[in-house]
Amino acid sequence: MAREQGRKVIVSNRKARHDFQVQDTYEAGVVLVGTEVKSLRAGRASLADAFATVDDGEVWLRGLHIGEYELGTWTNHEPRRARKLLLHKGEILRLIGKTRESGLSLVPLSMYFQDGKVKVELALAKGKKAHDKRQDIARRDADREIARAYGRALKRGRR
Image 1: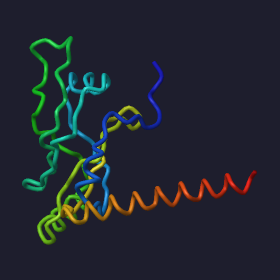
Image 2: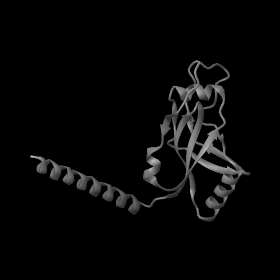
Image 3: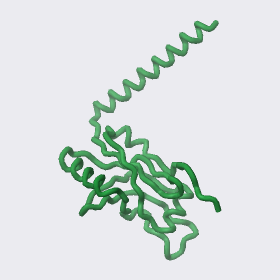
Image 4: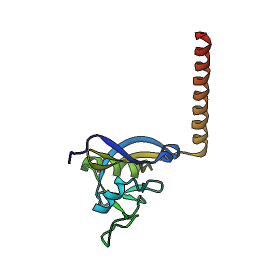
């Protein structure tokens, strides 16, 4: 069988970019068991309540839901268990410093297959306040209206 190439997104956390202001991103490998990988290939995962923590110099992904594999037997995995993330030591030390000093959170943005291996895109993010969210929505609506007006002006000019 040919080896998988490229990047195939399994699941993304679209709400994270709405609720958090992303400052930096990291790519991390995930330690999984066999039935978890089979479930991920079927697309049975949810990052809705997921977050990452740094405990004793190791980064853990918590709250990630990977549904049980239908054809699994007694060897099936627990859907919401904590999963270890694989990062370089320097990256882990940087994350420890940033999360402690400035109150930043580690939020998973997406989970994907990269050349056959499961990876998670982690964001070092700061929570947004309600007024920040309203400003983002207003800015997005204004940009959309400008694009519409520009498109209408172009159409009028072509006639």
